[in-house]
Amino acid sequence: MKLDIKDDPRCFSPTETVTLKDFGTIVLEPNEQLTFETEEGKRHDLTRKEWGWYLSNSVNASLKGQGYKTALVMSLFAGEPRIFINVVEEDKLDIFFDYIEKNKTKLICWLDEWADTSARG
Image (tube, rainbow, N blue to C red; front, side, top):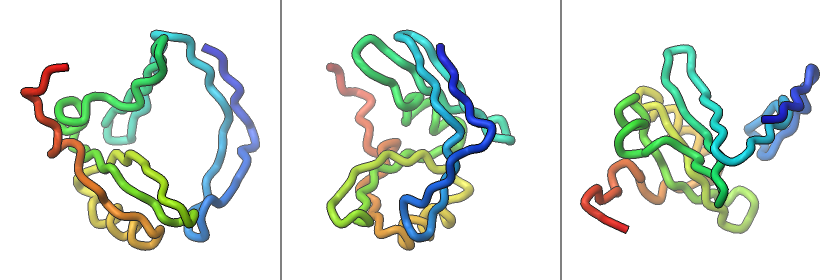
């Protein structure tokens, strides 16, 4: 793993209502993982694989068990449709719905409700 952490983060606004702080870059090798944790102890993993990335824990087991819902959304903010996956804390759904309304985003489906756990592939 390689870290390039900035002492003075770059601030930018991808939309009129959102300002983000870019704190740097982390380069992971295959089979390396980072875990992000909230103040309440909820955890979210990001894992590098030889073929790409696991961007999330299992949406219908691990995340759901921690009180997260996983949304597939379409943003129209940039003029053309862009698809995103959002992991939402269940007790903050009202904040999430307010956010997507203000940012020209539509909820396509909840992936944690959609998953057919009997499917084999």
